[in-house]
Length: 357
Image (cartoon, rainbow, N blue to C red; front, side):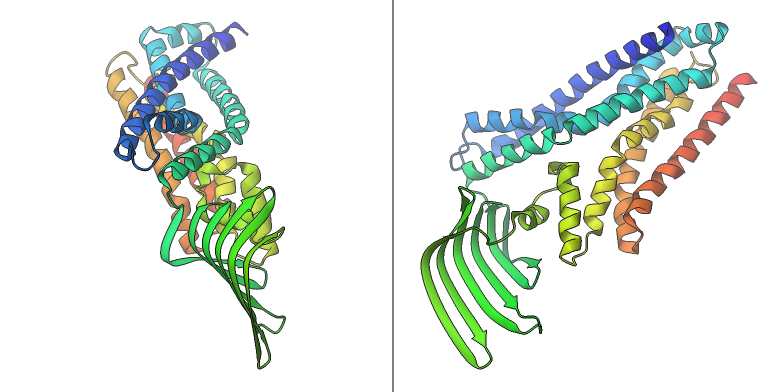
């Protein structure tokens, strides 16, 4: 039990120190990047500071896997230099057991971290973006061709999206059961206020056989207009969606006979985050528990860091390639993890065999 506590303490201290340094660097660069927008519109220094503070949870989430890797490598590297692992082995604790303890602790801590921050990070990240967009009067989407949605039997084109509650230039094409165009509705402005949509300048054309009926309404409040989930799917990045949000998006897309594979990929990537963090650490282990621990340790630690970070980069790219090739989202995300587990096991076995010689 003592060894468990000792290894966890060394691991946790390394993690906290690394995370603090990495997040500080991330916050600094984020702050300097935002200065180019300073005093544009209502984007004053106070708004910039609020934006940076609200994005700190997101910075922590981004840097967490790297902090686990770097913190562990530094802590374990120091223990290796001090011959602490040799002492543990002399006491009957094998290298395999030491590695297993470290990886299990990393996995449990990563799981707790990711699933407790899953809803927290999107909440504050989206809040930050809304404050920034409001201050800059910035649109989330501004495309001269508009953004297209499909909601059941209606095709929707939106010219400008400021948020999921403020839209400009909406055109809706509705079709009947025979897939014949039945109406065209144009709305100049739409804003979601007090759980209702407030629409302004509505021009509607209804088509009934050869009869065309046109109707103009200056302003009206309605309960059902455009489902805000559709807007969020189109405008929000995966980093600003919780696991529950992604799951809801998948169900929504499936129920509307739309392609949900991208959302499914995002879902499995979020599920595998704790495992990804541990595999990244596992790939670096052979460079700590290898031959001649005291000599060239710093070089081996740097190499281990590069391999671990390389894994994270590759597993971010491969699933996108798999989407192009039409591979199922679960297999698409799981397969790179499996391949790197096999690679890590091979590297570790090789280093342990070399250390015995």
